[in-house]
Amino acid sequence: MIISINSETERNEFDLLLESTTSELNNHAQKNPTKVSKLLGRDLEPFVKDVMADLAVGTVFENSIELIGGQKFPDIVAKKYYGIEVKTTTKDHWKTTGNSVLESTRVDDVERIFMLFAKLASPIEFRSRPYEEVLSEVVVTHSPRYLIDMNLEKGKTIFDKINMSYDTLRKEENTIKPIVDYYKSKLKPGDELWWMDSNANNKSSNIVIKIWNNLSKEEKLDLKFKAMAYFPELFSNSSDKFGRLAIWLVTSEGVVCPNVRDLFTAGGKTNFINGKIVYQKVPRILLNLFTHVPQILENIINTSAYELSEYWGIKTNESKKIFDWINLVNQNSKKIPDAKHLNVKKILSKLILV
Image (cartoon, rainbow, N blue to C red; front, side):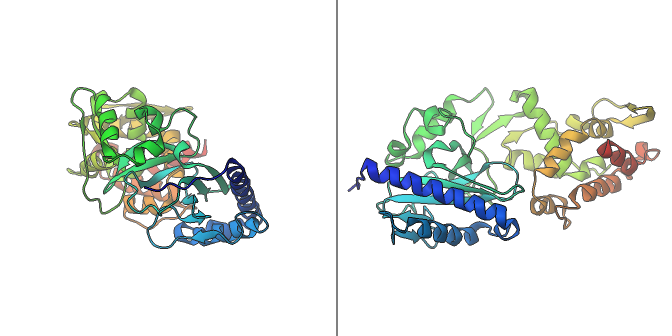
């Protein structure tokens, strides 16, 4: 393999170009957020390329900025040596699923790759960092892929964890083995590695299958809050109301829970107090709901309306997704015989307004 070599001076110039590009993109976002917010996925790449090409005029990178088509990696190349991978999210965070660990579509001769990440949730913001500095873990869709975290602390990358540099790993004959060995070393009794050959929804899951009882208290609560946000049927009396949740725990979260029902229904009925109002004989699953409304709302707010539409089976949008969730929970709760005395919609509305 022939590896091209660049000078330190040229690298410094590229760093300045990328920094200027990121700054200019943020200027565009501030001046015209509506336009920029619509530049999802492939629509953003030519926009970034044009901004970078304009800023490259008068530098050693003039006329060398190239937009790479198709499914190649990375998306933009400068002087056939530097690469820029463009990622977007419509959520208000800095994480997403990245590219394949195998890098079978990597553009020839590109040696240094940088991540340019667009957070298109308000306030819109662009950030850029060296690619290997933002890869925190490996997850599985149809193949192992990196998990990107633009806020990742130094020393916390997947490469730090496996004690091997990014460049060394990508040039290994068996790229996956060091990663598999690392995750195997972290398994708890009862946990197994798993591999998903196909996933129609292209959603990532943990590479390790975990047993519910091995999770920390915080991890268990986080999954419960997500479940109550994503699966309104949990608040019904349907005989299969835990079915979708059980599948989601395995396929999306890599968690096996043999007693899903007990997570929400164990404990009978009790009173719920909200200020001076006392609601009598509240079923346990509704008590869990009323007690944790702020945490559940946080998950709804941080999940796109598009994704919630898939979970809920209805079309929602950002402005009414909370109201849609309340209505879905209310409709399902009407089917619980022990909850007929409760106006769930009114209770949730009061709790959310508090």
